[in-house]
Image 1 (cartoon, rainbow, N blue to C red):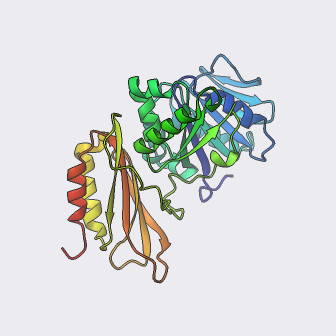
Image 2 (image 1 turned 30 degrees about the horizontal axis):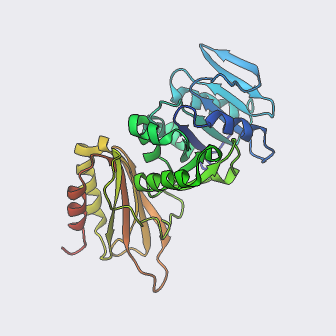
Length: 329
């Protein structure tokens, strides 16, 4: 049986209509990368994946891919489907090492991500690794202007892959990249040309793993505190003085009860008084958690850094409240 001590990593692949998710997924499933991947799709697109029907049950399909991977069409409860996959894997009926969930182009990825936090069994059986968002270089500027779902997908991303860069000018790509950084400064940005992307850009990112050693990139805080027109915005809290963890958690717990729906993602590394280790804290909407990270090195500058990404966020409330969480105040 599969041990819950080694949960199955899950990647959520999202992106607006036409961004190239299915093309990328097809290429991944055909590559000889050594990973056995189960894929859960909301629905099949017109460019269906070559497969052989293996099981059909009440409208859902579990399909064996031509390279031995599994593809599921989900029209119902994601928890139930994940549970069935885990049961079949434990019984030796299916063989896969990780799961990719491909959302529809109009989907808000938040409910999918929250599934792994609100169900205890799923939380033990699976590890939500990251949300990977694909962005169409040609159509993204208009999509981001007109569709809040496109902005939600960018805001929730741990990794962003820009597609169709070959059909636009380099200056347009650079401008789009700058806009994406302004919307979500914590997501690394790469490119996927004609569905080709390194498997390392998709798997084992550990964007949601509180138990992993989290280090925010030194330059991720640059150029994020200015005005722009997108509904999804971001800002950063920084504090060199040690914080009181109880105060931080109490304050944020109160804030998310009121503003949780506006806070899409929040994540950071905290310098807590009396602790030799960093504390990693992150949340999605109204779900928040914290855990111990790597130890601070001797002589290393200890600084708390948190990034908040969301829509109509109470920036002043958050900054002032966190400032009141300095230890000894």
